[in-house]
Length: 384
Image (tube, rainbow, N blue to C red):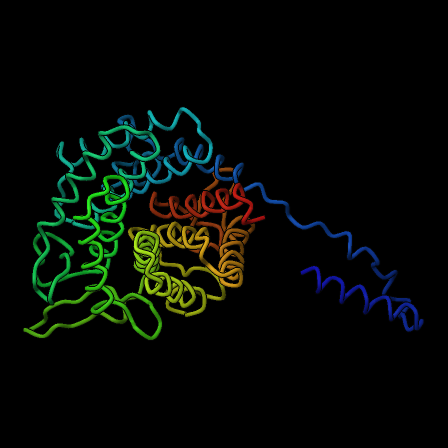
């Protein structure tokens, strides 16, 4: 933008000097260099979105409603709400968050029949991952106990159908999804990091290799949604490519690289990140695509979480880091200027447009994750 302004100023300067000005046009502007750019304080914006989300969506039991004034927001969206509490607590150290985190965990359980068990393996995986982060942030053993319980529950859905992998649900033995395998790898690596138990690392490596063989496009690194046995034939759903599956694949490779030092894992993560920034399956003109509200509203936020972790990786080249930072910055800036509804601080599914009508919790959480990521990277001096 600065270069564009400078070019315009030079052009108009040249016109003035040659006295070719039509007097009917009035005086020419000479203040282009004085146009101020927005100075973002991403932490303040994230705090405002946190406060607004809590005010609008919170219920009496400490869980979040799906819509303001509505009913329970669902198991897996609330698991990601726990993630954003951890984001805020890690960033600010504000003592209000540990109490809110614990009430949210208990609210998820009470709204789920007083158990953490769920037929959807991915739901339990999202909660398991956020619980490990909550344990790391607070030292509260209950979070680790829940995460380990969920891990063992999910692992019961492993089978040799298609040579391995975790089923999408407990009752879909012939359907295995990226969303039930990528997050399992991430959870396994998290549990390995906090326990040191090689058992978790072995599972992470095995499931990573399985997903790479069956659900990752070797040409692009983009992640296909699922493989299903249809009339006895293994069929891969290659036309379903979603942002969150790319995100957890990036997170899987990054974590295994950090644990093992094997560069291939990092290269996998970088390949997926680069394709996600440029290919129409994930991005539209530099912005993460609109995947609607409902479940799809939360997909982009999950991608942003793991994409941000890749940006933070010290082994990333300066060139790749700059490209990724520019991409995230463009998404955050576009959302800030064009997609955030004020004063409610609400986020729609299209970060280029103000939300119209009701905003689902899932969609709001994605916008909040974007602001928390921008705030984190700004605090670390990576993002302006």
